[in-house]
Amino acid sequence: MFRSKFRLHTCKIIIATSLLWIFIDIVVLMYYTDCIGPNCKAKSTDIDEPFDATASASRMGWGGPVQDNMLQRFKYNHNDENNNSTYPSHLLKHWKPMPPVREKRGKPGEGGRGVTMRPEQDAIMKKKFKENQFNILASDMISLNRSLQDIRQADCKTKHYPTLMPTTSIVIVFHNEAWSTLLRTVWSVINRSPRSLLKEILLVDDASDREFLGKKLEDYVATLPVETKVLRTEKRSGLIRARLLGAKHVTGQVITFLDAHCECAEGWLEPLLARIVLNRKTVVCPVIDVISDDTFEYVTASDMTWGGFNWKLNFRWYRVPQREMSRRNNDRTAPLRTPTMAGGLFSIDKDYFYELGSYDEGMDIWGGENLEMSFRIWMCGGTLEISPCSHVGHVFRKSTPYTFPGGTSHIVNHNNARLAEVWMDEWKNFYYAINPGASNVEVGDVSDRLALREKLKCKSFRWYLENIYPESQMPLDYYYLGEIKNVESQQCLDTMSRKSGEKAGMSYCHGLGGNQVFAYTKRSQIMSDDNCLDASNIVGPVSLIRCHGLEGNQAWVYDLKEMTIKHKTTDQCLEHSMSADQYTAILNECDGSRSQQWTMKSNFHWQASSR
Image 1: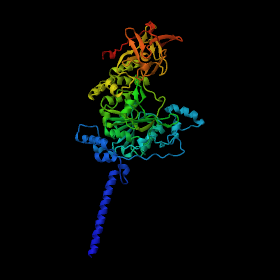
Image 2 (image 1 turned 60 degrees about the vertical axis):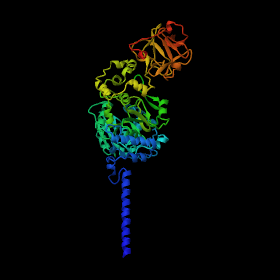
Image 3 (image 1 turned 120 degrees about the vertical axis):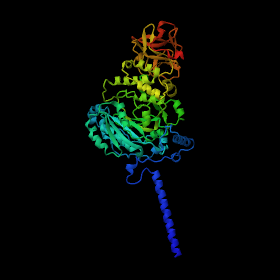
Image 4 (image 1 turned 90 degrees about the vertical axis):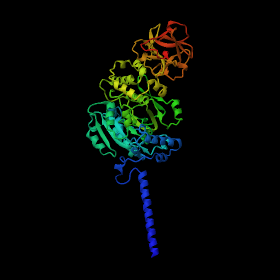
C-alpha cells in the first residue's frame, strides 16, 4: 500500500513538472513569435509588445560599444521626457523577414529580366507608349507578383537589424497610372515587407479619370492581405498636396512615400526602419534602381552616388566623395549621409514629418519639394541618409505624360523660387542669375515658412555648404557673379548651353544672365553652374570641364587693375579670337592688348572681398 501511494505521488510530481515546462515553453514561444493560433493574421499588426532594451540588444547580436550606446539611448529616453529622439517602448514590434517570391520559370519578366516584344507588336506598343510614357504592353505581360534577383551586397544579407521596430504606412500617389504598374508596386510592398511592420497601404488618387481606377480598384484592394485604402482628391492637386492628404490618414509610426511605378526588392524595408528606430529624426532613402521604361528589366543602380544639385536647382546624382567614404570607414553597406534626396522614395517618422513642417503648401503640383525638404532636414537638426542595403526599383520616364496648369517650367520656377527665398540666403542669387525667368514668377507669401525656420532654430545656408555639402557647385566664397565682357569685342563669355568637354563660346552680351553668368570664386575658378573654364596646354583650347576644385588647369587670376584673366598653370592670358566667323576664347601670351582685357560688372556684389 505504501508503495502504491509512493507511485501515485511520483506520478503527480512528474505530471506537474511536465505541465510547468509546457507552460514555460508556451510563454517562450509567445514571446519570440509574432502570433500564435488561428487569428494570427488579424492580430499580428495590432498587438503592442513590451520592449526590453537589454534583451533586444543582446538578441540583435550587438555587443560592446554599439550595444552600450543603444542601451543608453533607450534608458535616456525612459528617464527624460524632453528627449524625443526615440520611440516609447510599447510601440515597437517584433518582426520576421518575408520569404522570397518564387520565380515562375518561363514567365515574362521573372527574376527582373526584361521582356522582348514580337515584331508584330511594335506598332501598337509605340501607340500605347504615349499614354504612360513607358511600354505598357511589356508591363501587362509581367506578373503582378514577379520575382526579382536578390541584388543586395553580400554583407547586407548578413546584417543584423533591431528585433523590435516601428510600424510604417506606405503612401503612394497616382494620377491615371497603369493598372499593372500600380498594383505591381503594391504587391512588391506586400510580398517583401515584414507583415508586423506593415501597418497599411494608402493609395492616393489625384483626380484620375480612367474608369478602371475607380470602383474596380477599390474592389480589388479590398481583397488584399494587407489593409489597403484608396483616398481621392476632389480635384487635380499635384504630388505635394496629394501626399499631404495621404499623410493625414496615416496610422503607422513611420510614413514611407513611394511612387506608383516601383518595385521593392528583397529586404528593402528593414534597413530604413532600423535607422529611424535609433533616431526618429533620421530620414532614410533606399538606393533607387532603374526599371527600364521599354523592357521593364530591373537594373541595379550604383551605391556610390549621392544627391546634389546645380545652380538651376535641378537635382543631380554625383559620385560619393572620399570624405564621406572615410567617415563610413570605407564600408559600402554603412548608411550614406546625402546632401539632398530625389524625393520620390523615403521613410520619415510621422510626428517628425509634421514637426519639421511637412511640405510647403505654397508649392504647386511637383518640383523643388525634394530640395526644400533636404535643406530643411539638415539645417534644422535632422539627418538625411541613403541606405545602401535597401533597394527599390523605379520606372524612369524620359518625359511626363501629364500636363500642368501654366506649364511645367512655370510651376518649377515658382517652387524653386520659394525654397530659394526661404532657405538659401544670399546663394539664391546663383539661382536667379542662371535662371532669370524665375525672377518674374510670383513667389507668394513665404512668411509662415520663414517663421518655421525661426521656430526650429535652423542653421544658415553657409553652414549647410560648409558642413554638409562642401563639394557643392555653389561656391562657398566668390568674388564676382555676373557676365564677363571682353573690352575690344564687347562680346561676353557664353556657355552656349554646351556640355562638359566642349569649348567655351562668346556671343553678344544680352544682360539676361543664363548662359552668360559666371562666378569668379575664391578658389580661383571661373565657373558656370557645375562647369569651369579649363585649359590643358599653352595654346588652349579653353573648354568647359566639370569643376573638380583642385585648381590646376582650372585656376585663373583676375587682375582688376590690368583687367586681365591669367591662367595659373600656363601663365598665359585669356583672349578673344575670331574663328570661323565667330568669336571664341583662347590662350595667348600676355601683351596687355584690349583683346585680353575683360570687365566683371553686374548688379551682384563682390561677396568675398569683405571677408
